[in-house]
Length: 93
Image (cartoon, rainbow, N blue to C red):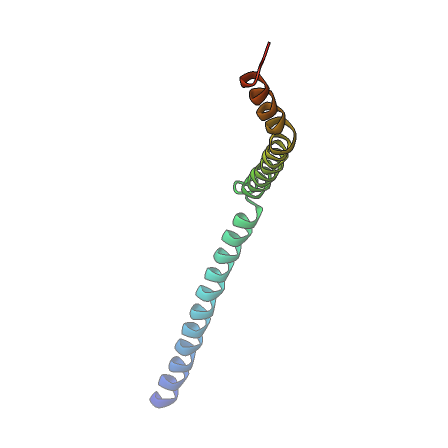
């Protein structure tokens, strides 16, 4: 009879141990899920992409303006300035 009681107590203890083990794991999974939900709902880093796109657009527009001014000065302004300086040094009047 004593052996049967020990066996029953052993099975009960194993059942409690397994239940506690899985309860702890479920609790940990729930806390991790709660943290993940909080991180996903957080909007602190949301503006990094927006700022990056704005900076990229500003750099591209600035480069286009610089290229346009360089082309304008190279084709229109500098030949005219060169011609006027040459005319000023060759002035006969």
